[in-house]
Length: 416
Image (tube, rainbow, N blue to C red; front, side, top):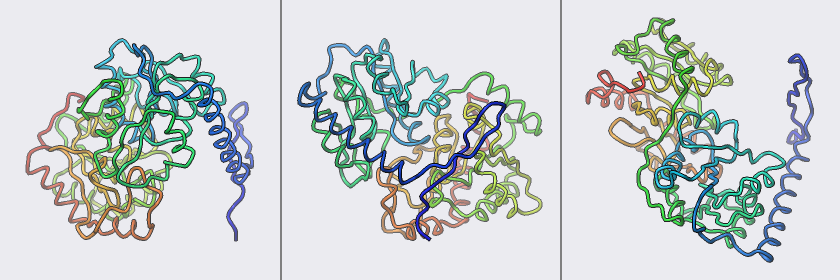
C-alpha cells in the first residue's frame, strides 16, 4: 500500500455534534510549499525596495518574541522573556506563535503582555498593527522570520546554527538570513543559554537560565483539593510524578521499566505515585499500571488536568521522573527535583541542570543520536537502541543518589 493521501478531522457544529471532514494531505503539502515560495519572493521584493531589518531602534517600546519548538522549548525560552522584562521593564512583550499553548503555559508569569497567533491568515497584518520595534525568533524558523520581515519590523533577530546541521535551516531561511540580524546558536551547547544570545543585538547581556512559570489561584485550589480527595498530605508525603509518555514516541522508555521504578519507589520509600500525561496518554498509562506489582498503589492523572492545573500539580511534587519531554521543564521551573531519562538526546543541550537534577544516559553510546535542532535527522534503530540501553538499575541509582543527599524526602517548596 502507498502512503495515505487523506486524513480525517472532526469538524464541530452546533450542540457539540460533529462530522468527519476528509483532508487531502498531498494538497496541503503542496499548498505549504507554495506558501513558502510566495513568502520568499515577497521577502526578496521587500529587500529590494526597503532593505534589511538589521538596525537597532533608539527605543524598544514593543517587542515580539517567537519561541520556537514545543512545550518544553517554550519553558526554556522564559529566561529570554525574563531578561527582557528585567532589562526593559517598560517594554511591551508580545509572544507570537501558537497562542493557545502560549497563553495557557505563560499565564500568570508576569512575562507576557500580549499574544499573537501566527497561524492566523491575518498574521502579517496583525503584526503590522502591533507596531513593534523589534522581533526575536529563538530558533531557526523560516515562516515566522518571513512574516515579521514582510510586516516591516525594523529589527529582526533570529538563530544562525553553528556546530552542526539543522533541517530547520532551509534554503529560504538561509536566503532570508541575509536581510535580518542573526545570533549564533551552537548545537551541543546549553540551549537556554544559547537563546539568550538573541538579546545581545539589543545590548542585553544575560546569563541567568532559570525558568519562570506560574499558575492561577483557581488551579492551585483545584489541585490542593485533588490531593485531599486522594488522602495525600503534600507537606509530609513523598509525592512523586511519573510521565511515561514523550512528545516523540521514538524516545519513549518501555512501560514495564517505568512500572518497576514505581514499584521501587512505593516499596522502598513509601512514595505516593502519580502518573501524568494528556488525554492521548491514557493507553500508555494503563500499560504501566498493568505491569505494576499488585501491592503498588498509583494514581493516574492522565487527561485530568488543564495546562494551568498541571503546572500547579507539578509544583507540589517532590520528585518527577520522565523521558526528556515538556513536563520535566515545568517541574524544573518550580524547582522540583527531576530525573530525566535522556535516551538519544544530547544531555548537554537542554535537560535540567543543577544539584536537584539528574540525567540518565547510556554509557555505551558513542554520541547522542538526536539534538534539539536536528531531532528529525536520526537513525530510528539507533534511537531505540540508546533508549533501551538505559536500565531500571541506572534510574534507581539516580533516585538513591538524590535521596542520599536529602534533596527529596526533606525538600520543601514555596508552592506547597
